[in-house]
Amino acid sequence: MDKPEDKSEQFVLRRPTYPPEFPKSVEISKQKWVKFKKNKSKKKAKSKQSFRKRVSRIKPGDRIEYRNLSLISRFISDEGKILSRRVNRVTLKEQRLITLAVKQARFLSLLPFLHPKKKDPKKKDPERTQ
Image 1 (cartoon, one colour):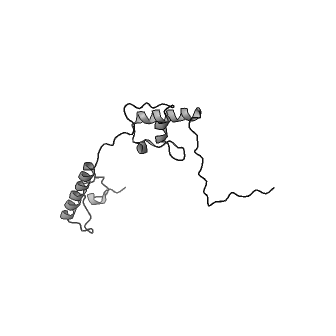
Image 2 (image 1 turned 90 degrees about the vertical axis):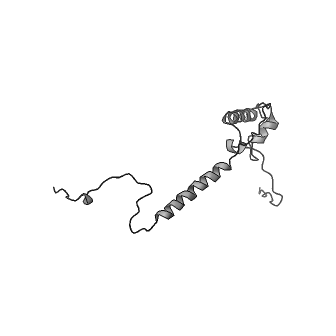
Image 3 (image 1 turned 60 degrees about the vertical axis):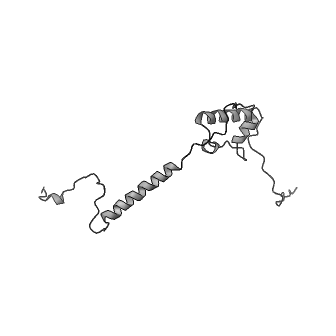
């Protein structure tokens, strides 16, 4: 078993360095790398500035209950599905209460499980043959 004499022949694990050491075949100057880094940091700064806190659709006095159908119906889609928390713009606790209230209202038949599909006037009902 021969040992390689040159260290260049041995495989050495190294952590990546920043800015990366590019091979000689790739010609990227240090100035281009610096420009790239500056542009990247500007994009991050812009995105942080545009953030604003959204106002909740539920007022502090509103009670989330299965009986409060006017409130619950705001958080249900046209198809009868419960909308996600991101779409509703509510907190996690409020979303859990909404989900529970909707399920209770459905069980007590205050809300339908599925909303009836709207009939298209252009489509004709298929005729049945006997």
